[in-house]
Image 1 (cartoon, rainbow, N blue to C red):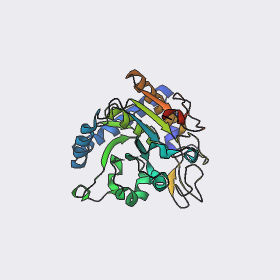
Image 2 (cartoon, rainbow, N blue to C red; image 1 turned 90 degrees about the vertical axis):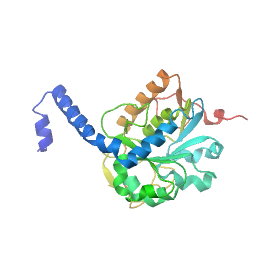
Image 3 (cartoon, one colour; image 1 turned 90 degrees about the horizontal axis):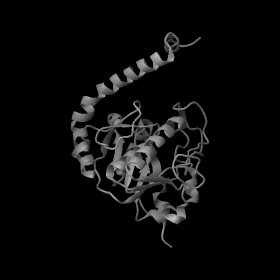
Image 4 (cartoon, rainbow, N blue to C red; image 1 turned 60 degrees about the vertical axis):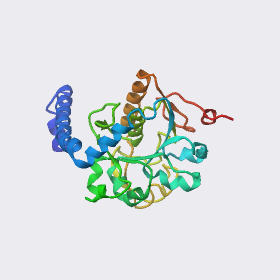
Length: 277
């Protein structure tokens, strides 16, 4: 028997139901605005983000995904580049011989379980505002505090200015693309964005890993006992297309240098061709 929500949905034509749903989502986002813009933690984050606006105009950066293809990529070449790392990328720092320039994580499950690791890192770190519940109240009395991004699950958009609301697009990579644009990077290169997962199931379902992680570069990434959400590749692609359009409209570029990646949104380039001999 359909659940109550499905039975109610069946009472309306699709266009009407979609309009009602979007109105509900918009009201939900509006309710978040006062704290997301006026809370002292966010006020400090907005100040920091404003200082980063167009700071790297004309420069290039690499967004490092966490796919298995990283094992076939000489990431050590990026030691002197601007780099965005995501989630548990720090598991590879010792092998690479350097740490990423920035660290971004927006998923509550990841932030909750990796909090101590994240707080031990020294580079600028960006977390979702909705994850603030995992941080202690004296956070901003400490050194090396993170920056909070006002990210939401609904309301598809590409944010050219990261001080306001950013749509998550079902992947932290999309958050990085928006941050890179905000910072003014002229050319953004993706690596390790395989856009395919060994784990299968209903998108966004929370699961508990039963063994080694085959969907990321390290078997310990989401290893046994780790709670995580199954990927939503369709929604991720929606975000990638928005990013592609935004960069092209601004006369900038995103290219994909992932070894064997399945993503077909951005122009492909050979990784080794990006470096002088």
